Image 1 (cartoon, rainbow, N blue to C red):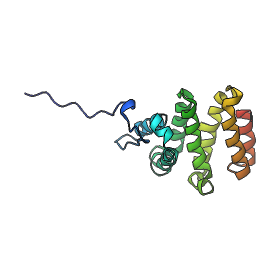
Image 2 (cartoon, rainbow, N blue to C red):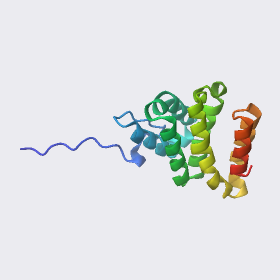
Image 3 (tube, rainbow, N blue to C red):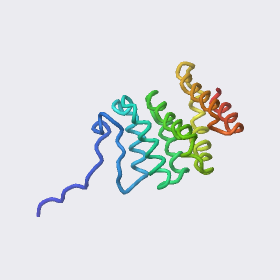
Image 4 (spheres, rainbow, N blue to C red):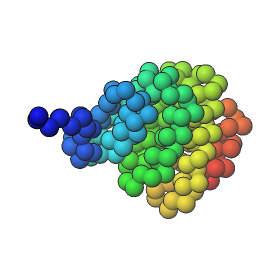
Length: 167
């Protein structure tokens, strides 16, 4: 008998959509989220201005409803902490920026979503952000300043975030 064909595999990261962010839709939303977060750090995705918006939309419409806010933001924190590229880490934070600021933060209006984003992502990455050199921290401090102006977080959370990020 002929050998069975191997199951379809995910493309290697280097082969993934060279010109844009690729968001797979398999049977496992958790794996698809990890894949999307990883491909956000590829050259093509970083050069494509719509990548951050696409991932933010996918989080809002697919990943948070399918996985829960807790799982989604925990996975994002893990990806941020393990990302090697400066631009990749910033892109992940810009995705959260979109969620917090687009339509006045409508995507995170549910208390569980905003709280999970704050506790499981923003505070968790603060440890790493505090350790960056001044030149790398500039972009993060600008984001915190923007969130403060827009009142994207309640005052108590903003204070805690500033302390966590040493802003």
